[in-house]
Each structure stands twice: as structure tokens, then as C-alpha cells.
Image 1 (tube, one colour):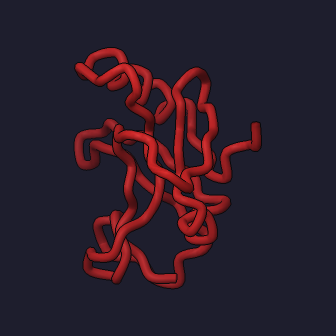
Image 2: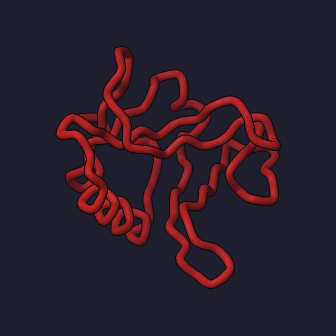
Length: 111
């Protein structure tokens, strides 16, 4: 199996395992990573439990099945996903070297 083109910090992996265990997911649920149109900078990140779709590339992240639409790889290759749990910020953060602009919230970008 090919290696995942996105890196996850240990904090992000731990949170994904916690969510995977605590949410009542269907047996065939997978973690979907990608992008979608929208957000204040043009595109926003997609990180959610979903179902497999035709044309997805499949990966494994420490026991969590991961899928990504092949067309999304070029937008997120080399990106690092972290989990922040501080007083001011809580949630997943995205450090994307492919982004030419990002918004203040860090959830959307343009390439």
C-alpha cells in the first residue's frame, strides 16, 4: 500500500483514534482527507469519517483506514495535520506547503 501523502502529528493521530472509537461509525467507515470548494480563501479542507467512493486511493494511518480522491492529492501532498487542544484553539489544524494564501481561521486556502 502506498504511503499517505499527508503527515499527521501524534496529537492528531491520538484524536482520530479517540473519535474512531467513540463515534458510532458504521463498520465500513473510513477517514476521508481532501479539499472542497468554499471557505473565505476559495478551498477548504475535508477531514471526516465517510464511505469509500469509486476512484478513491486507499491508505492506512496506524490502523485507521483512510481514503482520498486522486484529484485532491496535488492540493494536500506534504501537508501536516495537527490537533490543537489549547485554551484559544481547539481542533485540527492544517499546515499546507501548497497553499499560496490562507484565511485567518486556517481552515481554507487557495493554491
